[in-house]
Image 1 (cartoon, rainbow over the protein chains, first blue to last red):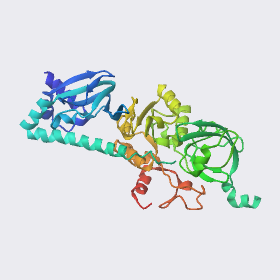
Image 2: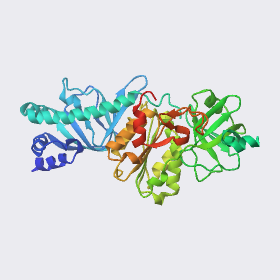
Image 3: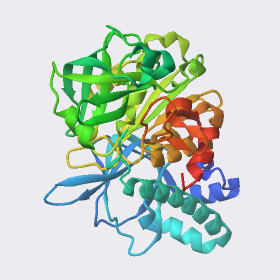
Image 4: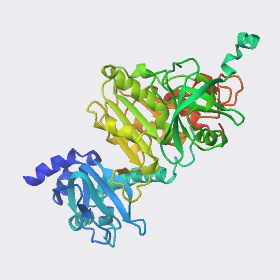
Length: 156
Length: 280
């Protein structure tokens, strides 16, 4: 019953609209809702990466501790973003801190459970990895533009 | 002299304007308040003036003030070359030459009874500030008003106090992001296009006005179009070296366009083709 309603909730997420209801039901077996308040850390660099997150609401800063300049925000992610690809690839360790800036509501997908399902059903695995890859592609486009430092030499 | 005026050279003659106030905006950006030559200088949002530092040279600078307050001529300038650096060294009481206003305007009338989405990058917020002033003083003419602003670092944020005041209003949405989130920054980090996908305007009826470095405008306009905003209702401000301001010298030619006369503001449906030609 709970996984049915979770599957329906997952279906509302713009990232997952390309997954069939069967695949969403399959995925929902690994998913749960998570709330986290502003100021808290979702995860920190070096910790085990055990969950993949789909952000439903809120803003999360991805930060790098860079002494002597202290902590720097590399990127912020929010509603509609996917966070935690490290869960899919060894060594399954977070490479960055994730600090919540605005109260967040997320779907948390258990990493071990997800990896098992990806191996068990390659059709599901293909479709889910397409979703992940499309999102990674969008994020890379954003980061590429960010790296261009386009405001540095402008003159208007 | 009068003959010169008769044959249409008046637009080429700078008129003296006295600086009444200088506001330091960031380390390299400042705002000049000028006493217009005839007591007031009417302009439309998006237009620019040629500012002349006597003995140094002339530069095109967008007007960043309130179109409903033409008795103060306001320009926000980034010091990047000889003339703008000379302008930065000026103080109240100094006199500059002014020609203008030139160019076409942001089509604020297009936004009437529609969601207005202002997307600014870096100092591109300055040419769009008159649009925001206009929208706020004619607030009932627009549906929702969004200001989406991206800049390099937290210390490069322009008009910070004004942004804060606009953010506190209930009748507009202001979102801000920086490309580099330095230590102590607790706002958004990332490119301005990320603000577009998260803003909840109605794309089918929205009108968007975009200004910033050309590459930023390209990506922002593309993002707006991908989000469903019609290309005819996305406007960008193209920049090339303007010199005469009246379409005579050809210095600002971009393909078939003379930007100082025909532009600088174009719908994306037209600008997209110009963006795509690398040689221009």
